[in-house]
Amino acid sequence: MQNLKAVLFDTFGSVVDWRSSLIAELTEFGATRGLTVDWTAFADAWRGAYKPSMDRVRTGQQPWTVLDDLHRSSLETLVTQFAIPGLSEADLDHITRVWHRLHPWPDTVAGLTRLKQRFIIGPLSNGNIALLVNLAKFAGLPWDVVFGSETFHHFKPDPEVYLGACALLRLQPGQVMLAAAHNYDLAAARALGLRTGFFARPTEYGPHQTHDTTALSDWDIVATDIGDLASQLGA
Amino acid sequence: MQNLKAVLFDTFGSVVDWRSSLIAELTEFGATRGLTVDWTAFADAWRGAYKPSMDRVRTGQQPWTVLDDLHRSSLETLVTQFAIPGLSEADLDHITRVWHRLHPWPDTVAGLTRLKQRFIIGPLSNGNIALLVNLAKFAGLPWDVVFGSETFHHFKPDPEVYLGACALLRLQPGQVMLAAAHNYDLAAARALGLRTGFFARPTEYGPHQTHDTTALSDWDIVATDIGDLASQLGA
Image (cartoon, rainbow over all chains, first blue to last red; front, side):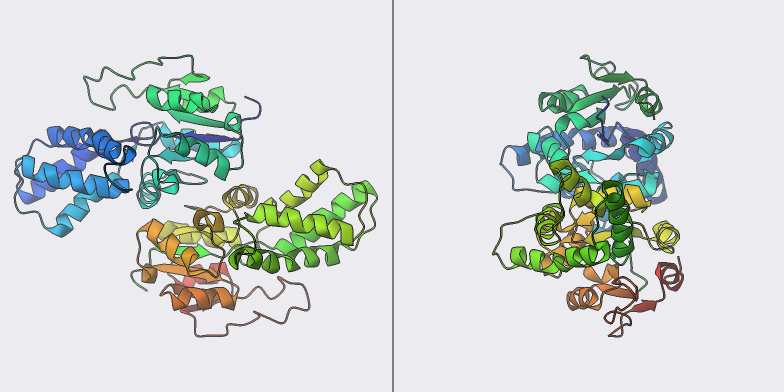
């Protein structure tokens, strides 16, 4: 681990709390419009559409599409399913961009700030660049560089994302760590030679979450949160 | 200018003082090795090789090559021309990476920090990503995002660089400003609809510099330095 130069982070769920942020902003939006919608179910359904929508691109059923546009497309489906009336194009744009306004977990900003003193830090996310840049501005994420699926025209867990980031940094995979709250993401990174750091976000999917509550492998670092990750990496 | 969302910076010469930094570090390196070389002439010759080397790529005479590798190739030529003896591969790597260790101009970091409060800021440079990220860490440049020629596989002033950055940010060209000390760069940006901000770096090329000492067009902003640019943009 002495050669570690960069720590790259999964972002949605690992760095920011998408679910609470979505529910809070959608609830507020609904209240101002007098809409009666189960926004918790809506938020979960929207996130539920995430992996299937990426998989359509990953398997070639759909040409390359950035996450903002996948979010917009699944939003339109959900607006019909939930029978939400009276939304304009501007409203749909505004709601799509809720994903640019997600709040960090309490330990995130302080932990990243410590890691930044010693390592190159950045997202390695399925988001597109504009989304990730706007999110970093909103949440105060002190990234050195922003890598998203759009950089590589591939979504995780395609190898092109992990190896592409290493190549752009001109680092060997062993000099780069993926840090994430998702075991599948770390497994993909490890298979390609990257270092791995896990910390659980046991309420990412709400109070009844059953997956990713613990490390499912002997990841290089298993931490309680990003602050603990920084401590274990000597930052 | 009310719609301005991002200010992107030419980097070498505009944000960092490549010439003084090169001369200082090369002089120190030469002293530790007992080498008698005119390092000022060497630094100027090295930068002199920059545009011709990029133009070989831009015109298709040479396949895509990142700036680190162009620097390395021209370094090898110059080591022969200046008859510098006894350099190992590790030495050549170390010297090539002097470009990762350039010092900012005195107003740079404070000016960027102010602009970052109000706008997305980043380099729009002919450097490659690793070079620009390492340089930002070294010089304390608080970028929100890092765009280099490598992002687009084109060097400035190719339109793909300017328009590619706007597309990744999902902004219209009129929402993005190129800020630079080089009139040619601003002319290319303006032709594509970007906003333009000029500030002179009259000693970038040393005490006898004759070009780019003043604005050669009515750029949207003509400032004395990055701090003045921030002031004129209300940041």
